[in-house]
Length: 73
Image (cartoon, rainbow, N blue to C red; front, side, top):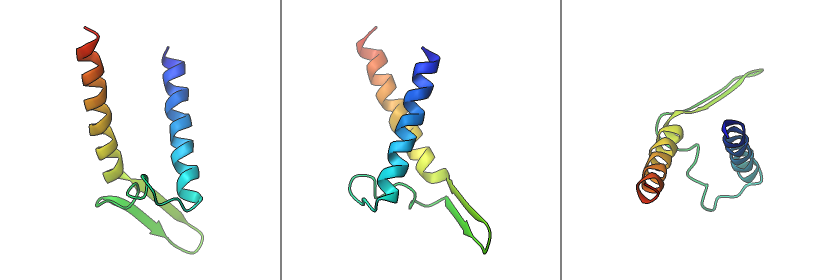
């Protein structure tokens, strides 16, 4: 079950990355452009660390999982 959950999360991450690379500014346009998202670009180096987006995503997923857990107990 953990392997399936991990694979699902990885697939969702790849989907988000593909949507953003294709220029889609629809429902995922906010992801990666929040405060605390770190972008460092130099000549031969690029660092992207979406800290703010990760925090928001964590809060949303915690609420959804909490609601699902409440309904199935």
